[in-house]
Image (cartoon, rainbow, N blue to C red; front, side, top):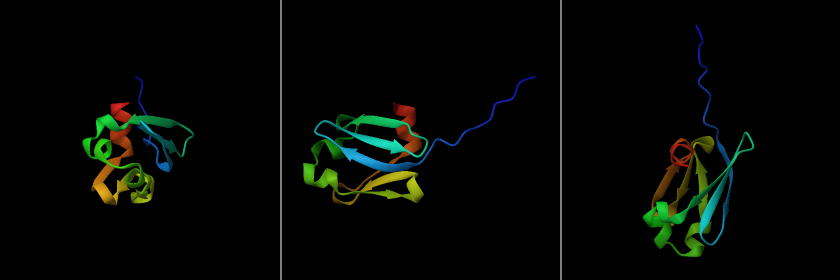
Amino acid sequence: MTTSRIESPGKAVAVRIEAHKFFVLLDDGREIGVPYSWFPRLAAATPAQREQWRLIGKGKGIHWEAVDEDLSVSALLQSA
């Protein structure tokens, strides 16, 4: 019988904002590219508003105060 080990989805350590998508760098070295079009609030945000992000929950999520958007790393990994 085989068993599976449930791995942690990883935690964000940085976010890089670009014109049409943002990138989330994870503590295990992976990087996720996410188009703003997946999230209407981010799609409608100004470039300055998109730049104002912060990590929440010790890297479990990302928060954009100006547009009231919270995204979890685990949800981003499931969507990618």
